[in-house]
Amino acid sequence: MKINNKNALGNNKFFDPKMGIAGALVMGTIVFFINYDHGIGLGLIAASKQATYTFLAGGTMMRITENIAAYFTHDFVSIFLAVLTPTLIAVTLTYILHSLKGTPEPINSTIPTVLLAPWGFLWWALQKRKQLKTIQD
Image (cartoon, rainbow, N blue to C red; front, side, top):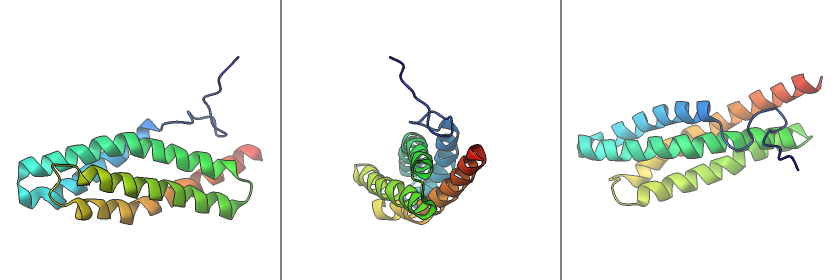
């Protein structure tokens, strides 16, 4: 029995390390500056939690976006669900992460995810939808 770990686009269907690293750098930096006025130590705690979380969850969420974008045949349904599903998961998990001890501004630290994640997921879903059509043609 062979287990297929590839999605419709030929990528690992569970995790995207490149997007995880890119997201970790961006979001960790933003969260550091949001919490910096509480001191460098607390800023670094919040930033390191965000960067670690974004690497793991972001790499997974981007792959979920890709998988959903490539799964459905109808373009609108694919794009809509490929944005909505990981956005809801990412915002919820980010708030939970920052509600744990150590982040002085948990709601403010979640705002960048609320503002940036849907646009990032939309961009990625559109790219992957276009890639799928190229492969199919």
